[in-house]
Amino acid sequence: MTTMSLYEIPLNTLQGAPTSLPEGKALLVVNVASRCGLTPQYTGLEELHKTYADRGFSVLGFPCNQFLGQEPGTAEEIAEFCSATYGVSFPLFEKLEVNGEDRHPLFAHLTAVPDAAGEAGDVQWNFEKWLVSPNGEVVGRFRPGTEPLDPALLAAIEAQLPLS
Image (cartoon, rainbow, N blue to C red; front, side, top):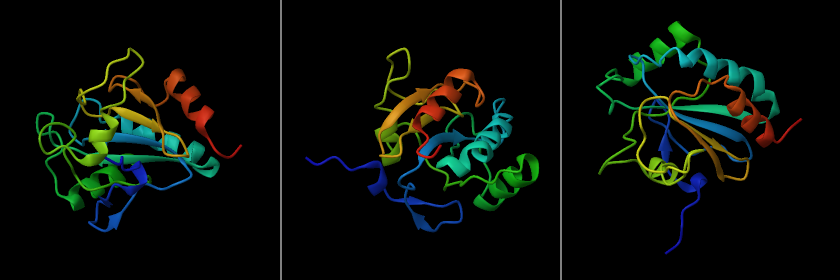
């Protein structure tokens, strides 16, 4: 059985265009939602994206409606909310499932990675984060309560940046 690399997993942009994860960059993959108590994390995620984009880094947002229906909108509504409310400029992808029988293959791969406490498995809530190295290895998992500007997350991101 061959294991598919993260870059081979088919994805769609929020607008529905086929795509894949960008290669050669450090990535922070985040399951996001517009009506969650953690939604203000979009501010910090956008700051991370802007701070490190020129050093080969990108935040990638994956809307999910599996947690108390906190991402009920259409692709257009999600795009408008993120842009108008938080000035989001990082890529957003189509709404998908992160847990359960219909879990997207990307999240099947990501949820196999343990967090700092050694725990793998289901996504706990919106705004869980995975750090992917420029060569496509998942090198960190940060639970939803970890703020985007948390010193441990910043240090992990900086250790993966391909450009100084």
